[in-house]
Length: 272
Length: 345
Image 1 (tube, rainbow over the protein chains, first blue to last red):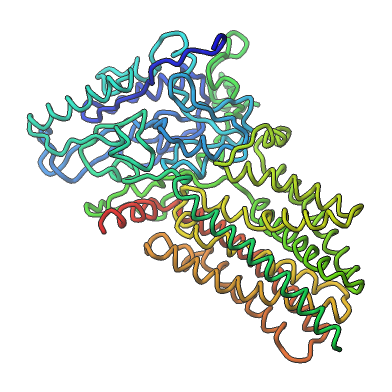
Image 2 (image 1 turned 180 degrees about the vertical axis):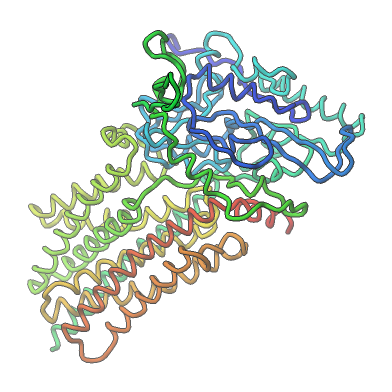
């Protein structure tokens, strides 16, 4: 159709946590490019992570895991570091998008999930619908915010600020299909080098049916929980049929109670 | 909006948290429009208040420093209050329609009362929902699309329909039937709204919550009517209606707790802490209300006691559920266990 924007190939992130050195350049680049305000300053006391969690004004978050277990090739005895730069997963089937009552959250031509700030009315439903705890509302602002996959940069043929700034290429950006291929090769390479624990998290619909695959997927070397990722996330609308069925039963119950009460009182009243 | 930092230094800085001088810089980034005060906000209080004790590394059941996985809901007191008011309005309109079917003049006053409670309930509901929005002036955006995947959007349409039909019922009695049908949806869709979330406790009890909300709506309506002066016929209707609702509410809350507790960690907020206290108190009050209904020789005192106990009970139940859901969203193991245990089976 004329005037319709041409669909670009689906874009995404592949975050290889084995390459992450915890420098937080991605966090800074994201804040600066998107002109995000700070969240206030908090000393969490947990390793070197004072960002703590993704939120309305934090769209990249580097997790610092001090693990009391060895990891080849870190020669630290029964201790190892894990770092992982977390981000919105831009799920193939997105809980926030399906929950949004205003249509503010849309799927872009790059396959990413985007919140239109001029439409969002801050109802907060997307926040409880995200199985990853990504999207949040900023109190002073009143709207929900999250990673845009640098929509403005993508439209100008640039890669997202976090991927651009990553000094070790732990964050890789590109066409989702290419990234999946690269990621599988990377896992094979790591396995052959002796890092048998390496696996991909959410790279396909088969591996994560609850979200039908993530457009921002990860290479991990421990259980997802260690990185504060859910082991088997399920978009709420996948199971909502149960609730609609129960609603029909509930509505029927109200009807029966009302009809019963009216009928009973009418009959008994007539006798007395 | 901005705050002054480094106040005691010779060169204090006025900032909204971006450290960009708006006088010389152009803000055009994706989040340039995000309003910020620069003061440490609720975000930081929430993050800082997460730990009550130092996290212990736990190889078999790991978490990320016991930090929450999910972001908990941002809904304030207005939303559980709305569940109550919307349920009350919906069940009243359904009762009004059922009474209309009896074609008995002795119920005219009660039917009018049902329509008034329904209509005023819809007005209050709308006000509560708009009040809770982050951008209240954009409330009409709820109706710019029709989106069946979003129970909130469906609910906005249901509330609009109920409001219209209940207002029309003042002029055309036939509209009372439509209002009754809309009312049934209004009283129950909120159960779907809560179930359709990633919050483990709400999601795990999704097969029961809409029924619990329906029962609680009937309780609310039955209890409120008992606070009015009623003749014997009217009292008989509302007492029967309310008693059924109360018994069903107690049963549904027990089943909801069972469903949530299939994974022990998920159902925990129903048993422990402030949410557990509210949840049990609500059930006790509702039970007290039904006892007052079923005692022989109804008196005005018993009716008032029943009405007050039932009203407070169903209102508390909504708040208990909100609190319990938030508590389970704060507990990363609730999500992890609910996803791991089905995998292990």
